[in-house]
Length: 252
Image (cartoon, rainbow, N blue to C red; front, side, top):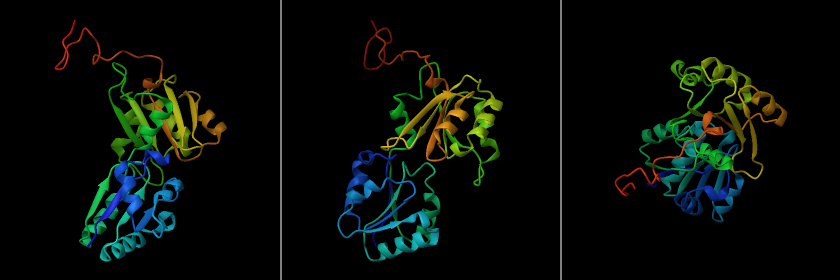
């Protein structure tokens, strides 16, 4: 029985799928892709005759039935999901159902949209002496978040933050971040469809970003990046400092 491959499709640009992911996609007999999020141009990599299924309108049972059918027939099945499958990928429930059926699976990492967004902005989340941590999170909505993981509680750290699945409630995001401790002049960037052809960037601060996002008409498929790493303050790292020696280089 063939195993199932969960493949991270990358943030949008079809060239940002990994080489391993590309090879699997080009060889797949069945591809179940997240049509509401995955760039359809990625399907150009599929071979002629491959069976393609958009999971946007499917429920869990229907997805698992397709996987089981393919595995039982020794077909190569790829579950193609946006970004990297380990972040808001909803693969745990699929994996657990496959375990019940004694069907093996393999996870193939992808490039997450928070990395694509950083590339679009040309920034680094971990600026020396400004921020050395990155919080990846979301605001509560129809899907709740644990009480200890509210934006307000995370904001107390005032570190770099990448907020997924929340731009539709930009006012609530701003309110919680301000209540939690970020100053009103904290830099914010909203990246719509990072690395896609219609990518859009909106920059501001917690004081004005909500209005700018609404003016741009951004209501979904965007990341909110918050923190001083987006500002003009920076420090050079010690890594290449000629006065700082380490295992591979002596100091002057």
